[in-house]
Length: 159
Image 1: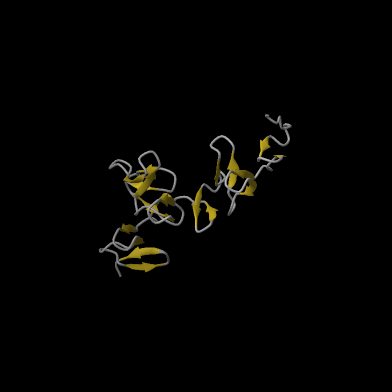
Image 2: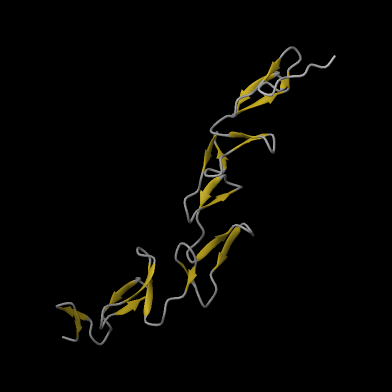
C-alpha cells in the first residue's frame, strides 16, 4: 500500500511523512533531515550541500571566497595570487602573462603605459615623473638624472 504524503511533508521515511527545511537534506541512512555543515546550503537541483555563490570555496569546514586578485588553488585549497604582471584566467584555470603591448596587470586588466610614464603600484595607474626627473626601473622611483643629480627646491640641479 502506498502512502500519499502532503506537499509540505513530501518524504516517506518508512513510518511517517516528513519535510526538510530549506537548509536540510534527507539522509537515507538515518531516515532523518540533516542540516548542511559549515555554511553550506542544500541545492535541490544537484541534491547536494554546496557553498553559496558569494563564498564558493570550501576549506577546513567552512565556505570562503578569494578577494581579487587572488584565486582558489585546488591543490592547496587556499587563495593565492599570480606572480607580478600576470593574471588569473578562470577559463584555463592558470596565471597568464600580459601581452607585450600591455605588459602590466593593474588589478582588472593588462595595460601598457604610454612612453614617458611608469606604472605606479600603490595607485595602480600610469604616472609621469615630475619635470626634470626620470624613472629608475631598478628602484621603481623617480630620480634626478646623472647630469643633474641633486635636488634643490624640488628641481634636479648639477650643483
